[in-house]
Amino acid sequence: MAAAAEMAEQGAAAKGGGRKKLILLGAPLLLAGIGAGLWFGGILPPLLGMGPPPASGAPAAEAPRRPAFFEMPEIVTNLNATGRRPVFVKLRSKLEIGRAEDAAAVQAAMPRLLDLFQTHLREMRPEELRGSAGTQRLREELRARAQIAVAPPAGSTQPAPQVLDVLFLEILVQ
Image (cartoon, rainbow, N blue to C red; front, side, top):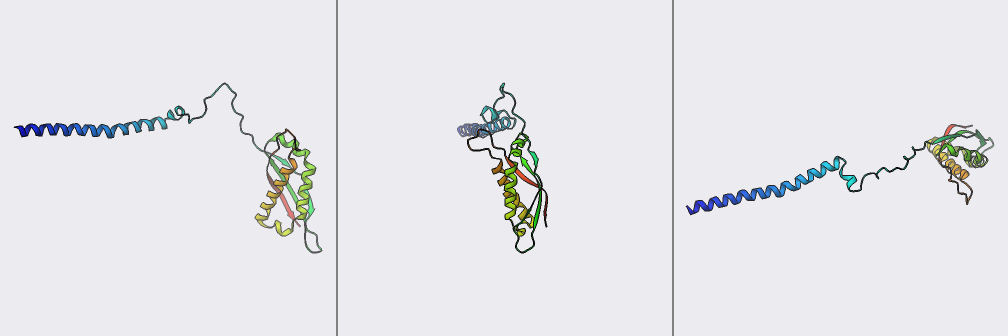
């Protein structure tokens, strides 16, 4: 009978050990499930300071500004061609500027813009304008020159107008 009593105590101890294992494995899983629910429910990130800042009485942020387009005058100039026959280029383009308010600054810089565009075009050879790669290089060069032309003078407190791109309406090499 003593043997039967010892077996009963070991069985009871084994059952208690199973409960301990269940609690030790179940508690972390339960906590992870609750944490995931709070995270994906959107409750936990603001509590951890990871959400957007709380709304205050300040006015709402401005809507994102849309770029504006400024029409450039038509440019007709000769290219740097070898041989006796002159080669001309006719260019119609638009400047994409960051804000519509910058159109006045671009208009004021128009003489400098035209000068920089024409001098660059006069130095180009007709071969350099062939293909999409040539057109892309011309676009990048003209955009860089336009940005230089519309920049305010040194020491000015006005923000510089931003030239985002040069869009070609017509390029004719003849």
